[in-house]
Image (cartoon, rainbow, N blue to C red; front, top):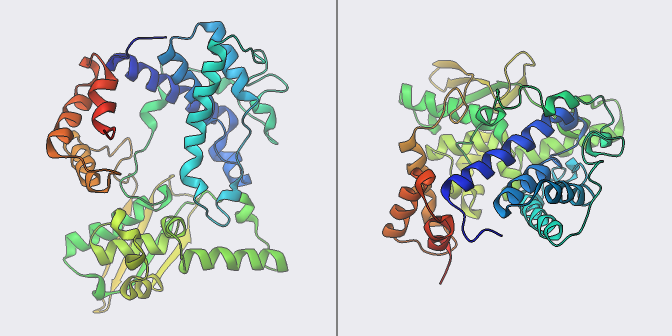
Length: 359
């Protein structure tokens, strides 16, 4: 075990874990095949084990055993957690982290796992797929092309497919100086990956019609926080009424506001499979007849529209009041300085974790 983890150690482990999970997701064809068929990210756990194993200083054999152990503790997660949307959406990542630490500690103690059947072997993770996978993606361009730099950071606390639409309506309001009460309608066009076979609903089938009605009900009449976070009409209407979309948009009072609920009924959605992923076209019509339309190809946080350092610091400080316990300005400033200079930090626990730990 390492006595301490430096900032460079931590960065190396993070990038390693991120790259592993992304490449496994690509090999599994998560976006193009798995998600549309109702499978979610079971591949996360392999990247997490790689990161933890790096931090713990596992040998190659120990790391192989840890990945083998975790392969027996995971499977592709189903979209059941999204239909209806439940709070497990928020905490299943915590189980991934917990299981990854346990797998690495077990391997460190000498427990062995199926080292030769983790990913591409007949009984490996990719074998769970009911479609053709792409094992070459695991190593193609390895060390030359970094998939980590293609990751998008979400700007708003809502599902990633709503980010561009929120950017669009807020951009219209800022540029043309109108208020939510001036809006007659908002039309969103976007490309959507639909989980659980929703894209193939047969409206002539009674079961499919009922399912479609339930999905629409959750979208236009969301009641819980997760339902509101996954609802495009709620995200767009709340952003317009508040001038922003943040944590306070999901309090019981905010979710019940009449102005937001009324505006939701005037938000419509269409799908354009030719739009790039994450992109959206937003058309806003005002009650006075004026019409504004714009295309948001790269929402804020996209690799081609990244946050600046100042914006990231501002977002962190905006989140501070919602901390589980109070953080004073000195602690926050110290944390910001440590994170911005993480590669120079000698002990991540002392510089980053302890200031966030209650006494």
